[in-house]
Length: 302
Image 1 (tube, rainbow, N blue to C red):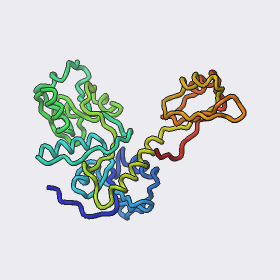
Image 2 (cartoon, rainbow, N blue to C red; image 1 turned 90 degrees about the vertical axis):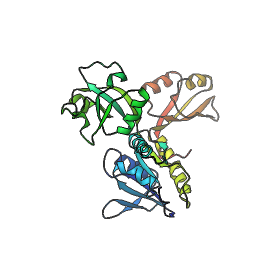
Image 3 (cartoon, rainbow, N blue to C red; image 1 turned 30 degrees about the vertical axis):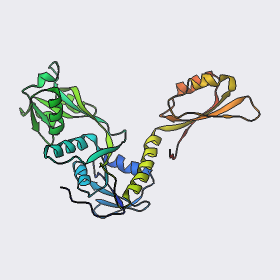
Image 4 (cartoon, rainbow, N blue to C red; image 1 turned 180 degrees about the vertical axis):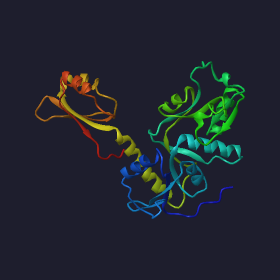
């Protein structure tokens, strides 16, 4: 049984010390207005602008630190979080962690990959084979769902070379671009988990006032994530052409339409999800819109 966390009035967030999620996680938190004072060993960052401290650790350690109450939240890949939860289940321990937020970056897939000269006929093809992986519990769950008996071979690195070394017949590995698999004459054939960076936390409300700090941080994070690719589109158009212009607007928030004093036209502004192409602006102009502007958004709270 996990011992209760010590009373604490500061929020502690674990992020990857180094690796593909480390720098983006820190940049995301900084975009929420957080600043820190680093310890000499650069493993702990004391929050100055908000009572939110950072612990810089290995990504594999983040779920355990949250489960043990050492940290309150963590930014980690879903692949790591899922594997940790399934490992706890296998040990007969309760799964206490959940995804609090999906962050939309750090995307990758956990794929089954076979020899590029083989033809894929379906999961039943894996029956009786050795599958090299760093995610045995996630793989085991998928195999059980498919009704397939196979042997996971647990490797902590260089999974993709296992078939060439005779350690395994196929692999189950994280795939981003697929370049490493191609270099080892392997091809991905099916995805067993889609992963991305997530905010992980306990499946309960935090104590000692930390939930209020967490809620504030999450509101800022929601705004920062949404803001990352958002643009403010502004234009003017004749009232008679408004319906046509509305039909050409890109995906985004509901537009705000305002009358222009002394003119038979309206001003429109809209928060857009993602870049606005030149082609889109030219289409709008051909339909009568003018004074078109696409502006960056510095800050936003929903």
